[in-house]
Length: 62
View (cartoon, rainbow, N blue to C red):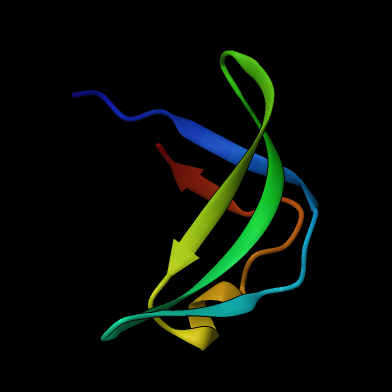
């Protein structure tokens, strides 16, 4: 499986803590652009410090 880079163009929600059964994670909804165009996605992180780094220009792979 190949991964491609995506760049955040807009942060659409505030980071929120999701707790489910015995697991918890942080997520934030973003608009991003990659080779296929603009799309939206929920980015998921395990630590609050990681989710706070998401801003316009943040690069992730998917």
